[in-house]
Image (tube, rainbow over all chains, first blue to last red; front, side):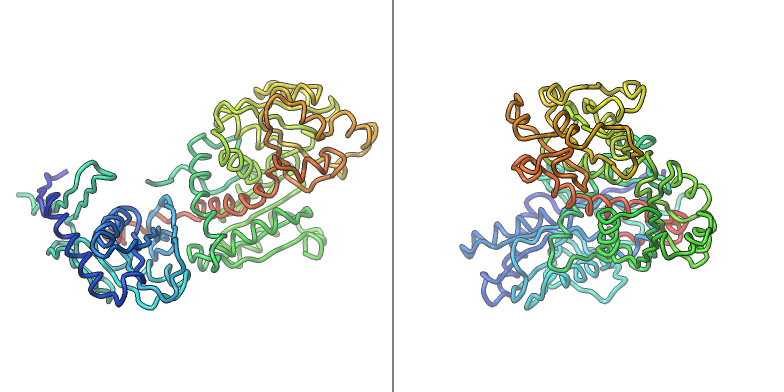
Length: 185
Length: 320
């Protein structure tokens, strides 16, 4: 294995500030915060959605319902992924019809996860609007999909990895980029 | 985060590892919720073709499989032996090869002969799921029973007694294998004529009296007296059987603890089980039916598997 180069992109306080700004963006785009519902994509999107909902609740004094979904069963690449991935829970706490539903994920890359999430939401109802909020947009899209609210944009190569750590699951808050090793001498 | 351990087929629980069984049960959990949605369908098996090949009559199992398949968006065809070329004397392998020539992906089969599922699986490329083969195994029933117990209490250490016609029961065999692998204590109870010789060697206790079984167990899995498989002589009469082995309200009221009552259906009310028990608060019989769909969805999902040889060419596709 070639050595990897690990770079800190956001530390805990930067994540906190970024989430705050994202939450404000989401509220600004909603005609009424009572119409909002935030839906985290398994797994770290769920934690991000929970944090955003907490900030929105603090700022607007409106409890924003939040849901979670696992998009595995809607993926377009199951035929090629080899052994089947474990499926996590999908729970949507409120009817989506007429709501401003936000899909929340940690990293936006190819756009295929979001495509699957859109298909899945369509099976649950017809929101008035669906928005997309991501903590990190790393480029590299394979589908015509863009986020409405972005925490941080970063340029990455195809072999790079963006690791998002959240304290609920990983014990700490950080975003790190793992650069693929340059050509070996 | 992956499941590479299950093979091409699900033929029984005897040869699965405890991890395999847990993987299926864990996978069934999120599938439960799909059946509660307004739109009860996910696209994961879109384009897969599944044949339900039933050489024995079945209502519950066949419908349960069919719901599971449809809720995963597979295309399904049902073949029953009556009215098919099977009744014209075609062999099992010829039937299956003809189906395979039409490019199917999976076969779900119920057959009257023990070992039929393995026989088929060894000879065709499609995935084979055993939906009951003779007196051998009925793995998805065993799995749904495990899931139903696990919904209520940890399986390890739980005392489960299988009551009644163990001799003719593939459900009993799948339950015994599965329960033992997950660490349950297992017993059987029934008239000697309906218990297989040497059943103790599987690692189960034997109770000759239902009262002892009730005193010992925290779960009773009450089997159907398989009247159609009995050519006389196994029990003196149905009334006699009910008097001696029937799971009645009076007997349960004397139990030292509250029991969970299971039955794989279809029930013979007033033969192996009292109607007041079957409809009572401790019966989980309809939960078993609900869980059956989720367990079968999980098995279909896991067996449909990916093709790893394609994974190389698609590398870099997954997010992050």
